[in-house]
Each structure stands twice: as C-alpha cells, then as structure tokens.
Picture 1 (spheres, one colour):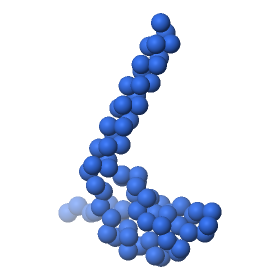
Picture 2 (tube, rainbow, N blue to C red):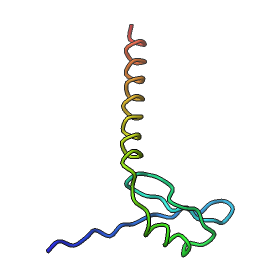
Picture 3 (tube, one colour):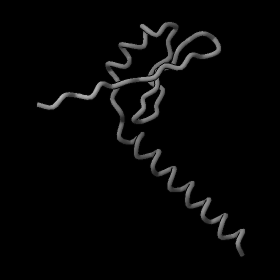
Length: 76
C-alpha cells in the first residue's frame, strides 16, 4: 500500500500583513488572504494547470537559448 505525499504550500507574509500561498510544483501564487487560515480552502482546491508548468519550461529554454547566443557572440 502506498501513502500519498503530503502537499505543502509555503506561505509568504506580505508588507501589508496579508499572506500568499505558493505551489511548489507550478510556482503559482494560489491565493492571497488576510490570515493563513483563509488560505486553506484555496490550497485544498488547487490543481496545477499543465500549461503553466510547461510554459515555464518553454520560457526557460528560450532564455537559455538567448544566453547561449550572447556567449557565442561575445566570443567572436
């Protein structure tokens, strides 16, 4: 029998005293609330959108390609 991993959403406190809940899989801000308890319902309903995760990977590849081009241009 396999146990389900416990999903953990770190909370970040903002300057105005509110809290953000962050998904460590898709790196999205799930919700913003005045108290940490208010974030729980949002965390329970969160699911990662595949497009968000794949878009981040696509953006990273483009950035790495641009950086590689700059290195090659600088070497010439």
